[in-house]
Length: 613
Image (cartoon, rainbow, N blue to C red; front, side, top):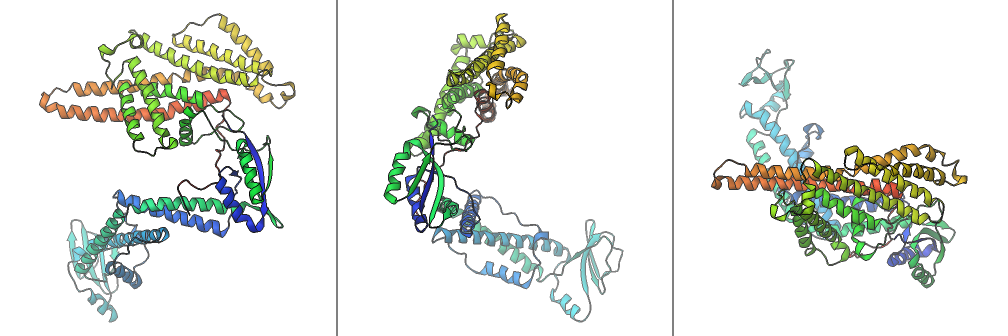
């Protein structure tokens, strides 16, 4: 069910604003209408949060061994004596230790990361310079400066062979000439000037190796600091709570010595909130929501349906407050769609094993185990469907054949027709549930007759879809049903006073009726996608077992083909569930039920569980 809400306005004295918000946060029962502000405190906390997340990203990348990419040379600042001194400091000073408060650890991690990036950038610059100077061989790097002091310029450059200008020295490497020119520069048009080095070649090579060694040492230090990430995650929760608190503080409105804030409270928690208000001398104003207000949605389904809240959260969907809680039909049909799209009992066994194993590895709280509970139910549904269709890792054992599997594999295309009939039947039942639910909610208002009319249209389209693909005949009486249904919809979908505002809905009625055909046909995706998965598994099995090799040679190739093939098919099955099973519930069914999934989830103002300031 969707929990009824009460709009509240909470008032307190200005000097107790912070204490009031802290007490309100302890109740954990109010969704505040918080507006983000541009206060300096708000931006400071957000900056700390960004630094924390950057430090976590650095530690994660180090733990995964991701390489540090040097910045493009064109984006680096000019090489100056100050940069050279900084580089020497990085090489000579010991690395800072990761210890202290979370903020101190964050600062150290970011500092180490910046040093490592700087070392890698310097190594890249040195590598380029070494590559440019190697063809010239060893030479005295002080000599060009001495000559320059006497007014004699020395220029190094490279250009495609042959050289067309006078040079002192020239070394040809494949098709490129590396040249030294004395006096006023007179370079060929295609020449690339090479900067004079600050140090000789052996020194640069040594510094390049030192830079890479020090960067690697920092990488190892960050990799060994992976446990620090747990500390930073807890600190991130604390910062998020503080950020929410600061935002709520900025949202408070002031009138003289009084401040107030608005929000929403579940109706069944109003009495506890009243007691808190009396205890702390708050002013409390409560009323029912108005039609124009955006009310947060708090879903509280039956206990055995609560795992669906995790699925809704993962999908980022929530019904609006004025809509219905469709957890039960969503759960029931999603389980069926999951089973048919995966389509293989063997895969269901794997999912079940993973779900049961996962349950043993998580906290013993219902919400922490909810994803694995859902997977357990979905996997059991998949195993049942696999048993009915006799499909196990792409094989169809004759010993496990049954009446349903024989009906689904009937020769001459009848098996495919039967499977499409199942899909159409699931579709008409799914959509009928949506319209029948609407009719029950509207009864005894005359508008319920329009929903009855839509049920008639849906069933007509069911028979029409079946007749199009040749799996069902079109009964004559369904044409009469269609006519009556259209009359019911046209006459009762709007009240007399709604005709002017709803004229567009009446104009769209023919298109909406035709779209019902597409809605029913859309369910055939269950057959198409499920069949594709089965065929992929069958082809990998055939590919592996048809290898024309001696038994002792083909064991490993067979194992690899089966493992990789079924792993790929398994992943594609998961993707198809996310696309198709979700679509049929959130689009086709929801359109008929009138669910927009535009709701705002109820987010109580409270501390993150397990986080202490």
